[in-house]
Structures are given as structure tokens and as C-alpha cells.
Length: 178
Image 1 (cartoon, rainbow, N blue to C red):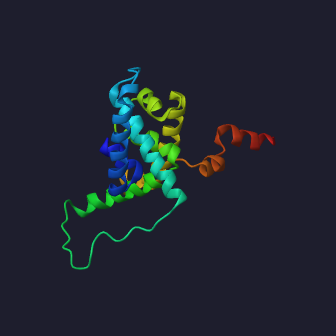
Image 2: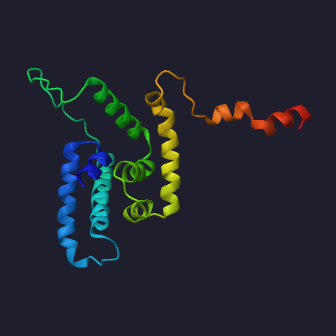
Image 3: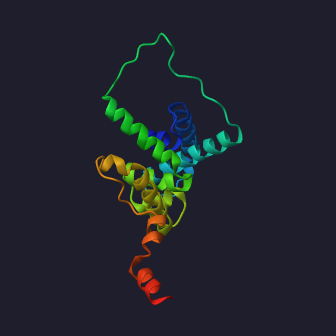
């Protein structure tokens, strides 16, 4: 639950607050649980809703966070610099995705939920989860391609490169004057 809230909100303080709100809501609504799905699916839906509520509130009243570290506080590296940079690049890439694509990707690819569980949690059709994941993965592949093959140029085709190539049919049509 914590990981879903943290990846959704990308702020530990907000995630902790959303998680607390979610568990209070779950406690209050426990008598209304219909057992049509697993309890974990039900709880995750409540957590996702609490996170989305916080996102909506934050968009309505934007704030600027204070710096978390002071000048005299010691820096304690927990891992190598390369790992930290990679996490930041991935976090930034996820942040670039629209909310409707980021949520399914986080739930399916990061948290490991099935497409059907994700569809229930988000209240959308399974096909919608699949298409949003596919679109989001394509965007992430473009942004994060350098992490997989740092020595090679990006090999993910873009819509521009497809238009430039025009495919076999496009080239044949040009030769035939169509």
C-alpha cells in the first residue's frame, strides 16, 4: 500500500497522509465490503482514490515545498551515485507521463498487479488498462532508451521516423506517382 501511495504522489509526506486517510476510510467502510473482489484489491482502490483526491487538492491549491536538508546536516549516501541517478531519471520519466498512463504502469509493471486487478482498482476496462500501459511504455522507452543501451543511439521508432521512411508501401507509391 505504501509503495502505491509513494509512487502515485512522489512525496513521502503526502503518501503517508494519503495512506492514513485511506486506512481511516477503509475502517469506516469495512461493514460495506461486499467481497466481490479480494480485500487487497478493495484496499488498493481506496488507497488510489485517497491519492487521487490529494492530487486534485494539490492542483487546486499548489504549494512550494521547503528544502528537506539544511546546510549543516550531514549527507549519508545509502547507495552508489549511479543507482541514485538511475532512480531519479526513472522517477522523472514517470512524472512526464500523464496521470492516466502513470497509474496503470505503476500498478501493473512496478507493483505487479494483473491487468484485471488494475482495471478493478482504477474503475476502468481491462482494454483501457492495456492501451494506457502500452502508450506509457512507448513514451518511457523513448525517454529511458539510453539506460538500456548507453553506447547505441536510440532505436525506438518515433512517429517522425516512421513518416520519413514511409514504409515499403509509401516508397512504392512515390515511385508509381500516387
